[in-house]
Figure (cartoon, rainbow, N blue to C red):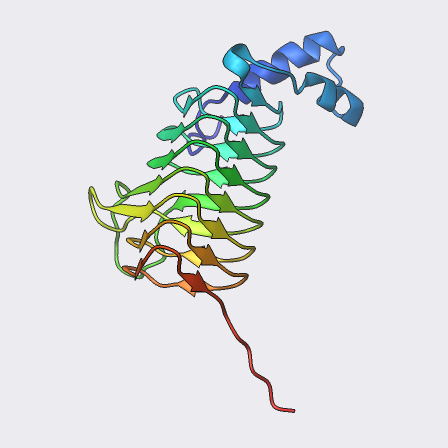
Length: 196
């Protein structure tokens, strides 16, 4: 086993599924059969990689090939779509949606050496669409903060140490640099002009 990857529930799930389906995990119809409710209403697809140390509340769904690392806490009724990544030091409130390919809580993109202890705190009812990214803080014990009821469209980016209010909309491809504060109800978009 590669030490860079945590031990996960996936191994246990696949072992049980292998016994149930004669060891043949490659057939799609069986994979969907195996995606069933777990204890407490947690629904984790068998191909998802979820650390045993992650704290998952009731009624959450985790889609195929999603990754959830050790120091992650996820609130109630959260839906994590396929291939989404939720990395260490991330807290997610209730009723959030993390769509395909979104990455939450990854290391900040800065040239100098950074701490791996920065955090990302996400409030309730936030929607992160396809390939949206939000980085955790670059500061030891620092926090990137996302308020409540925000909408992050596809390919939007929130850098380290930002403080995003509530009811904010970040449009497709909009990139927010580090240490930016955005007030409640802001609407951020990108306009591309071309010569005609």
